[in-house]
Length: 223
Ligand code: CTP
Ligand code: CA
Image 1 (cartoon, rainbow, N blue to C red):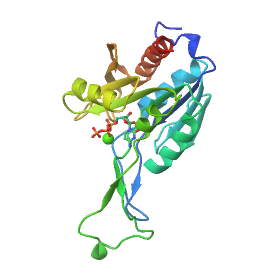
Image 2 (cartoon, rainbow, N blue to C red):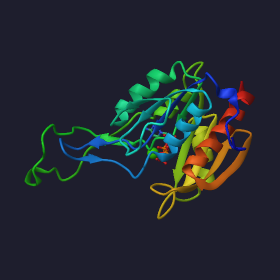
Image 3 (tube, rainbow, N blue to C red):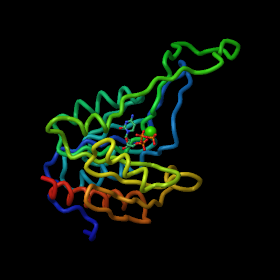
């Protein structure tokens, strides 16, 4: 038991977490994706399950093992993640959006492999639903935590997202060359409407525990 262990007060709470990238098909063999490893979301899920919460992890494609005690729902696209997340968020206490959701999908993916000679000059994209924004807007919905992965002006962009999406809390980190995605150590600037705290630098596994402890505190303060 370390100082970062989550207080037992999330025991029995229903927690829904999104994690990992999404894949947006171009044709039968190609897709658009991003550099998310899923480690942060899986670490939060592990910490929440260890704290006695009932955890549903809605996961895009990752190379990670399911943490003990976690119910995992595998999805591939943002639209699939949206459906699973909204369904389970409806009767959850906490919703944590750690996924790197593709903002756009290909308008009309081909169901066969497209030959290079037949490739269109450009891909037509259409916007994906904003999952965490919709959860935050639910009447009587869960305490909602978002992430903001930014390459610059981290705090300003994170505050804007906290407000624009009407979130209860946001965890911001700087990404880019050697930072954030695909690396082990990370720092989070956690912001909520009345406060702010820096967590790290530490491994994503320890950050998951520290962030969940802070979420637990704010969750109880807000209720
Ligand atoms: N998110 C989501 N659904 C989306 C896009 C983002 O749930 N379709 C969530 C992410 O999981 C994260 C938060 O919204 O918790 C912020 O994601 P981010 O990509 O940083 O913000 P966007 O609003 O998409 O803005 P932009 O990409 O332009 O910075
Ligand atoms: Ca985005």
